[in-house]
Image 1: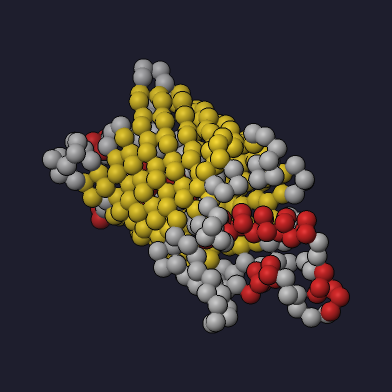
Image 2: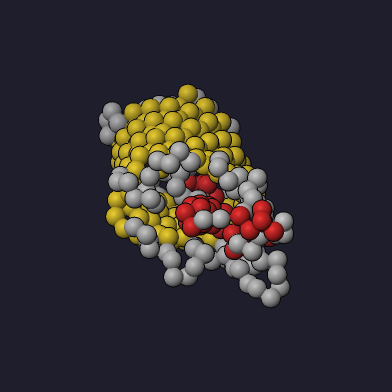
Length: 331
């Protein structure tokens, strides 16, 4: 197997490690589907729902990968808690690298005393149990495997020897009628994915920090959000951190979002991607399409992404709103 192929596989596995070993934040509709990373954001609207998200990404070398997420949340209003679930899958087209995970989460609603910080503060702590299935390389024959007929000695072949693992995530959402703050810590258990008892391959912890603000005017509403993501890596000397800004304008049932993604990692620092998304709401149904484009031609910065989502809400406001979430007094 030549050096270039090794480099390609290493890069793809690096991306896969971020997706599998932590919650994937690089969603076009991330600002709207915050529950994909932090289940406590079900408390932002307190509306039970089922959502399906599908993404397809292409790079300049015509390689592609994609992911699908099916996420749901149900609010037990009388008991002040939410139960959530998520099924995620990721796949790469050219080498058959794929993964899948299943999450179950519990979120509790706690209304704090008005003496805390400011009035009408609500806290939503959560805990998630996440099971990640083994990573697999399919339909790939490495060079030494072809020549010898024996299992490859290439380190990447060990991808086929990883095991499934159970881990836990925890965090919270705090909100009032104008501001919200979310914190997530992933991979609390730091599970060992190695099958060889003599070796240790632990999943690194990662974290997400989100701060948002909304403002309603007579004919439209504005929502702004800043997010920071710290991601684990294969090598401790390599870092994968990023920062994202979202600016959304809302006109009753229609909204338009513009976002910018910044890298702060070993391979690249600075503005990496820009993207847009459109969302339309029709009573209990939400629909959306989005596009993300890279800036520059760096090998770690050449992905064009398309994303679509569908959401069914078990309840809806019953009136037109230019806000991302309503004051708790409404409910």
